[in-house]
Image (cartoon, rainbow, N blue to C red; front, side):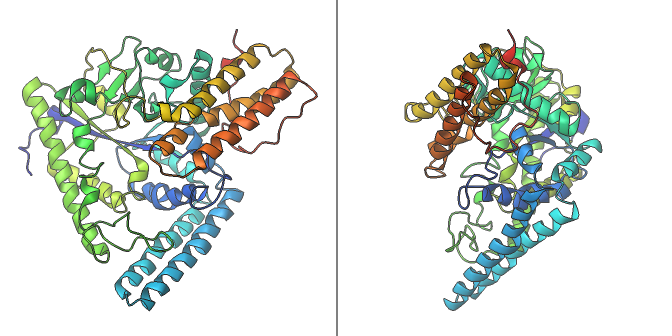
Length: 493
């Protein structure tokens, strides 16, 4: 596909937005549903992205709850990560390779042995930075290429939070966490699940947020050029529509990751290794990387065509916001990081301007338009997280929120604040959007329900300690969730 070249500054820019998030799993269970999720993402996504984003004008959203866990890697969590990489991962690759060889599948065995190097390389990479992944990300931000966004404390669906105090607890704690680690917020906040309802921008404005992303696909129609126009909200923050015509090139059953040369993530060995390709037969790394380069060229050309069409019809530059879960690039799509690297290299060759959202918004005048309540779920409402099948989870989160807010309003003894802090942290954990999402998609067995039951039980114990000084506050399990917890929203009159 080709696009007629024009002055890149006149046509606008492509804004690549990576949303990096993991629920709090550190210390909560083992493979396949516990903290090894986090180790896998560190190895296959976050560490490799450090090199890819070294000079890239990319917007990177880091959820506070992800950073809470990454903050532990310079300490004792680092030993567990290295043991998993150099011990568990090495052993299962070796065992499955031997099993494939015994079955006469030498090519598959060779691929399993090759892929084992991904994990040993990740261990070496973490050692080189002393485990300080957050410090490395901070240096990328300080260098001025990557624009770091933050989010509410534990990635809740904000429209589903029942009280003003609950919303402000999530926002205040999330922003305090970001500023403690990375300095003053640049102005961008990722709304979890792009979940928006009219009026939410007022609270964002109160916390200094200047920009956030929304999904207006249903309201405007897939492919509408209106998606290339940032929207000025009445309260001040700018809403940036995610352009799903562009996102769908990468995300979904018919996107690039479904290509025949890429790794098949569905067919697996005994220990969940993936030595096959989508098109059947053994995975061939060289052929997959060649396909990633081809797909990157196609992606850049299509983004240019989208911007050119907008300029031709509207007579002004537009912004194509392509927002992706960072975990797609390396974990769910094995070759995704190489595709991103190829996009970053190919864009200047084809004359496509890449920009962070901060710099892109300086070049494009926002329009005034009403925004519809929506999310980027399937469907694009809130039913992924709030439906009859999920009623028990929704009830637990909302009733817990009302109990914590009520208990805080009656708090008269400063000595009981540790119990309130414990209750607040358990509430934040309950409000994570991940538990409902995992159940809706049937991705983690009973693990989400177990986590919800455990957090609710610990919250109830903390509430008892708030109401009765003789009751003991249970020992914490969320050892680094929300270390910058801000209780002020709960205590405000």
